[in-house]
Length: 406
View (cartoon, rainbow, N blue to C red):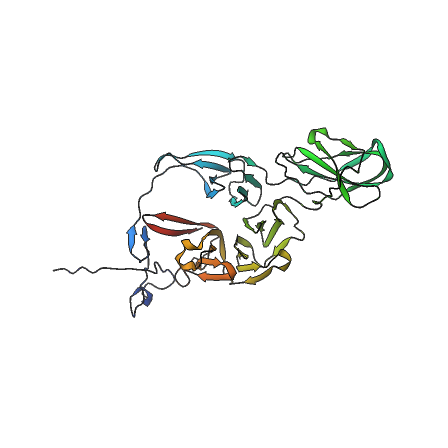
């Protein structure tokens, strides 16, 4: 009579680091055996494999680049467009896709981030914002040029006057301001701009009181009303706060921490003004790293920045006191997932955690700078993976973290 021998379980899953004749693939002295290869199977918590369910096409695209859930929307980058995907009425029904943004570079992958209930995006070339109702709009506004000033009618005493302008859109988003222009005149001051951001609807004019340095709000006009004349510089005590600030810097990763929007580009991380995600001061409110920034995640008491040369933990009560600690020198890909620790058995916390992907496979980063190399010495993907995605899913009674690096 033939003998049937049960194989498994394999609680440690697949191992592509060791030679397949290594002892890690054999059970001995209580050691759990590993799998040399696992194709088209799911592993449950006890390490037993089960065949994956089949799939059904619900949306056909030509050049998929990214698919994310952001601000209550399912957003797809297909080639040079960002689409809002509406699933079918029931599983298996076809989905529909509505174009929200078009004309983007087809090879530049869009990065998305939810902040304040809105979805911000950048592809390293352009940036934008998608509202919860699916409206695509501008993230910030370009800084206008220094205004062109001239003498006009009015009652201003003869003096030197400094004047600067900002732009505002229909939602009240205000641009940064350039260096103020100067004029010595009496009567009134004519103000004009040589160029204006296409998303701007209004121009706010700030002017200094005669021979004084500080600028105060003096007048708002519609863009189409330029040029205009300022004949009173004592209208309000509201000072100019946006001088030398600018809109978002197109980058390669987005994340946020305690009210600051963070943009990673090259080996820099730019932070916005607190609770003002559309204004940045790139000359001073910036962090520099030794290697290119790939991903970041803000947690309860600090944030992580993953680079091509290591994972960094930054913490402190305020930006001036932020301290940076490097946790390792691994090469990370452009992907990250944040989720409650209770969803991850090995997190050992209910606080939100971040999962990064890179040379060492899946890496868990928790509050307090605690880092766990979940697949270390079992999963090697050190062949230069640049980007990817990490998702959490529940299927067939199994909770999974799925990582794809490319």
